[in-house]
Length: 120
Image (tube, rainbow, N blue to C red; front, side, top):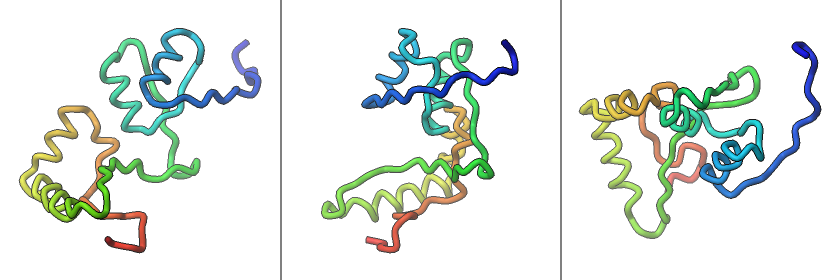
């Protein structure tokens, strides 16, 4: 009945996004929690099949940072950061985010280790 609260949801921990979508498609899960970027990607691939609801900052979420992980000892972090800065400066980042409909998950500028006090 509309207006009634459903029972408490059961958490099903899955390995990755593909497993999560498989659970949705096979009716083993009614909904899934993902990052906003993942939700946008999933919905973009099947717009008539999926929708998404995003939490607000007031509800306790923060920026959905898209990230690249690199081993600290391979000296690629700084060149990759510089390359990321370059695609911001030439407008390519904005074009890619628009092409993939990820504007809601875009960032204003690149950052290196934004959640760390250690900048190495």
